[in-house]
Image (cartoon, rainbow, N blue to C red):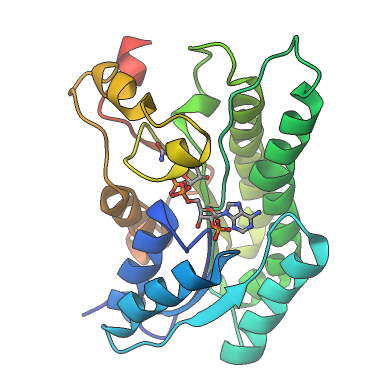
Length: 251
Ligand code: NDP
């Protein structure tokens, strides 16, 4: 029996990569899914993939970094499905930065706004509904939030370290209301994020940096997200689940 039947789930960054795989897995398990992203064409393709399992998702074209559009994500979902059970904060961007260059603050602000501030605002908007449904939140962080590792990833790593701390703080604050809050931290996963960041060769280097000599696939992270969001994880809150092919072992 599918464990998300009649559950209402928002997945941000669902037009590609880990978010797309997560949306499809939730649809497969019977959930009503709201899929969020800026690229309408790619959202339409993911909607088709979800619909193969009999559930038409709610497609929401929105930029999570813009407050009005963030408001529309929660409002449209609740309007369509009358409730909210699970919020998956997955949308994220990755870029190299250089503290000695003039564009450092521009990169820092864009990464922090998307990877951290948008999560805080969406959480703030979703909390009343999650308290009502005794639901939960899964934040997609990164092992970059745990290790210092390589230079020129300061903004990204800072955003994910902040997200980990945010996850724990909100988990404690919402625990008395029966709402769980957790994060998952992937190591390198084969998605478009590196091409978008202008780093097409990054995955080859990252593969060699893992203990298992491989990079992850979006579906593996999606399965982990579904586990954490499910009742099987009812004792778990404030936790961060690593799936990194042993990369942290080698740091
Ligand atoms: P992709 O680039 O494949 O997908 C990113 C998704 O985020 C897209 O759907 C994109 O949609 C969406 N997105 C980005 N910015 C915004 C925005 N402002 N508003 C709405 N949606 C947005 O990346 P991944 O699937 O790899 O990344 C997903 C998450 O996983 C991120 O948080 C990332 O940090 C994390 N992660 C990824 C790792 C990897 O190696 N791939 C490793 C560790 C963590 P659109 O362009 O349509 O807006």
